[in-house]
Image 1 (tube, rainbow, N blue to C red):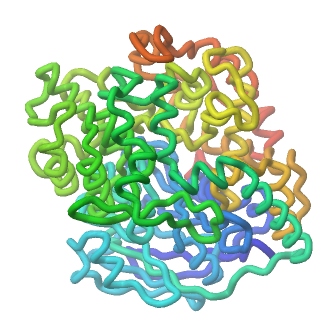
Image 2: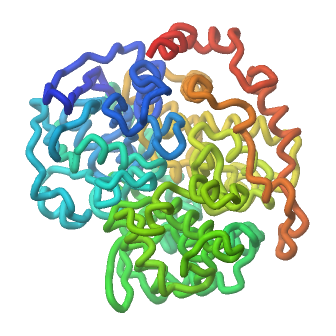
Length: 597
């Protein structure tokens, strides 16, 4: 078998049992790998009615058929689970070395369930796996844990104090600065008393057609080198290049999305990061783009921040002190916290404090208490214990649910949808909650990729978004980075997939696989109790227009887009996939298995 190994490694932490399993080739071909394979395992094995922090939940680390190959940006892998923050099916994606090492050890999937009586860490290699006591590691932060476990030709993923304390904003850190972030996946790992995983492997996958692969790779690299976004913008400024762009469009979230323009955006821009704080740029494994940043302040140095972190810990808190922002980012990385949800929850707390609904010293524009609040969140101390549950629970506790900028419990990323109609539809329909990585409309609505659309128009946006969602799902499943999509498109993905696996994929075959995965995730969420009523946005975006900036006077016109979206997807008026759609996608039996999980 090429591309895939056809093998899964299963770990039962309750018993310590380690087993090897074969994965049916038909499943791999239908669900590709990565996110798709994870969705398959979660649907078949995890009831949506369980406690996500109970032993029955599953951590499914899944590689894609291109993960660990020579294909540009092929260092990525996915983690799937039932989210304790959102209670949706959830996947998270990382580009550090762990996924490739897992693949090189011979596995398409690492499946972890149960709960250890005592803290442990897991070692995975080509012969299987072994569990080790982690008493000396429990309580350590991310850098300390990575340094303690790191070995030559290996990769480490681990949780910090936030994961140990089952904070619902906890991430699983892939090395020191990468992460399987969002959704509280670190809390799931912490609930299992699993501190870290060390993966070791050297057997790189062999392509079915090396000659064809070499040629397609050559063409792909030329396109990546030719695109100004992947050869200039991202390499020179990283994702932080978006700060001034979003501000100019009036969609830079400011003070808990109360505004779309931040007066001091220049102070926290990608240009300022490069001028004053950049040490050097870096790249994920197999990536020719190199959008990552090693940075410094007067006191520290570390990874990032990315654009999403700059929005979350900067403009959305009304903070323009770049040093304070960068150091807050370092602290989140150290403690194992998702910077987007942390920042969005802090901004919610600040608005609640403004309304005298929450007793806290946190205020918009003030940095004095930020680090203390982040640390208190990680250790569940004082008001930090409330914040550790995320913005939705915090706002509900304070009697003002409208102050939480979230969908299905997941906090918003850094694009105000009042200036991007398609982005608003994306947030409302994303299977894991408010997320820009599930068919980001940034390209067609603001950057002109693959072509420029009227960002304020609603008609036809559903069709464009659906295609984007399917392509996004494919990229997550085959093991590539979404930034590759700024330079190469579906045809390249299909050719690369065919050359590596030896299976012939036309573009439509590949996109049908993306549609299959998307519908499977939808089925799971429906079984978890989500309905069309959850495909919505906070009232702020639907009813309160901006009063200044390039998106002044705009709100999201969601209703007509959502109706069109359901119809184009072949779902009924309530957002439920029809029997005909399930049959066409080959999901009837799997949907029934999910019912009985």
